[in-house]
Length: 377
Ligand code: GAL
Image (cartoon, rainbow, N blue to C red; front, side):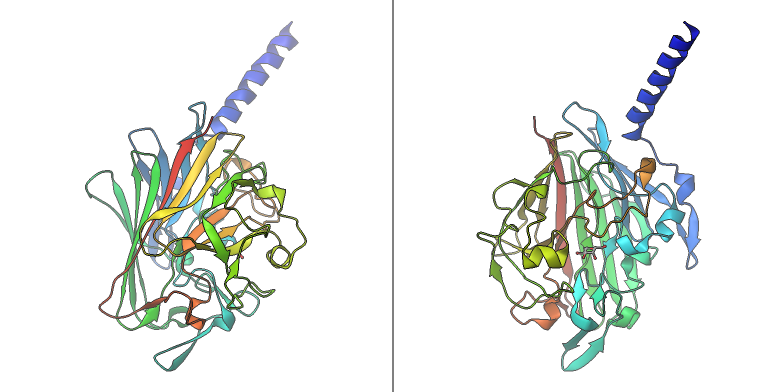
C-alpha cells in the first residue's frame, strides 16, 4: 500500500514537472555578467493576455516567449538558454539575436561601394555570414524600457564602429521590441550611418510551436507567400538567378507540412541539407504584409510573420547536431527548431538587380517585422 502511495506521489510530481517545463520563469540572476566591460541582464515584457517575452542585451536576444496554446496553457515557443554563460558558449548557432550588420551571406565577404572595394571577415566556408566572427549577436547592447503609446517597449541600441568586421561607416542601430495586445511580438529597427554602408539586420529567433524542442518541426504546416526564390551554389551563395517556385518542393504557397518534401533529392534541398532558402515575397512595396503562416498540430499554436522586408529566409535547423542543450534540458537536435528571418536578399551588395542594401549618410534604415500568435482548433 505504502509503495502504491509512493508511486502515485512520484507520478504527480513528474506531471507537475512536465507542466512547469512549459512555463518556467528564468532566473534573472543567471543573466548577470559582464562582457567587454558592459553589464548583461535579463529583461521582460508582458501583455494584457499574459503573454511574456524575455530578452538579454547580449546580442539583443529573444530568450523566451510564452504564448497560449489551444487549451489556454502557456508554451515557450522559442529556443534559448537558462544562463548567460550558455549564450557565451553557443554563438555559432545564432540563438535568438539580432544578426548583422549584414544578416545572411556575402560572397567571399567582398563588395564595392562608390568605387571602393571592401573585404569583410570570413566565417562560413570562405564567405561572410551574419555579420562576421564578432557580429551584432556578440555585442552587449545598451538597453532601456521606453514609453511609447500602447505597451511597454524595450529599446536596444548598438554603435558599430567604422571598420568593425570590415564594414565601412559608424553605424547607430536601435531595435524596439514590444508585445501587443493582439499577441504579437513586434520588432522595429532604425539605423543611421556616418558614411555610406550596407545593412541587413534580422531576428534570428528559432521557434518550435509544439512548445517543446524535444520534437522535430517536421509536422509544422507552413505557408510562405512567395512565388520566387534565389537559387544558390553549394556554399549557399545566390547565383543571381531569380527562379519561379512552381512545381518545386520549395513551394509553400499552399500550406504544407515541412517534413513532407524536405528530403526530396533536388539540388536546392541537397545544398541546403533541407530548407535554407531565400524566398522573395510577393509584394511590390515596403508595406507590412503577411510573409508566412506556420502552425503546430501538436499545440494548435499558429504564428504569422508580417514584415515590410522584401524577402524571408526559411531555415529548418539542418545544422543542429544535438551538441547544445537549451532551456528545460531540451537538446537542440537536428530539425527541432526553425527560423523565418525577414530580410533583404543574401549577397544583395553583389547583384544590381537585387534590392539595394545601401544606407547613405542622412538616410534612416527602418524595418518592421511582427511575429503574431493565435490558435487553430
Ligand atoms: C541561418 C542560415 C543557415 C545557418 C544558420 C546558423 O540563418 O540560413 O545557413 O548558417 O543561420 O546556423
